[in-house]
Image (cartoon, rainbow, N blue to C red):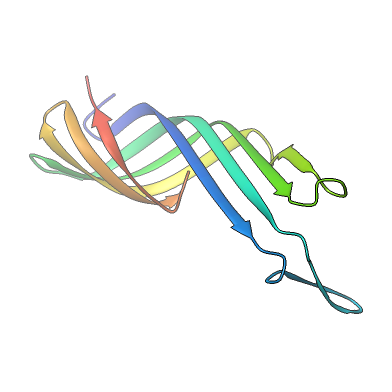
Length: 136
């Protein structure tokens, strides 16, 4: 758009998996602690496509410091599998609203004028992100 402002699109994907054993899990209720004797596992998958707007705070020959904001579409799913399937089974659900809102502070390093690397921190797909940046 200009030397100070730019627009772009980001794509993000995150996958988290874990498991637990029944002897380690305890749930605390009003009336005390109850052991969960069932082992299990879980998976969380998150995909997003976000339109971004960036404001360049400082731009040198190959380095740019910027702040960014964006909004877009996000799909997050969680799957939980309890070993004792007769009682619990597999449960799948979608997490939250399908709207992604981001805000970040970042640094880009351009290898050539239209290709570089970036790193940023903020409220986005994750607290800390790295990736490639393409310009045209």
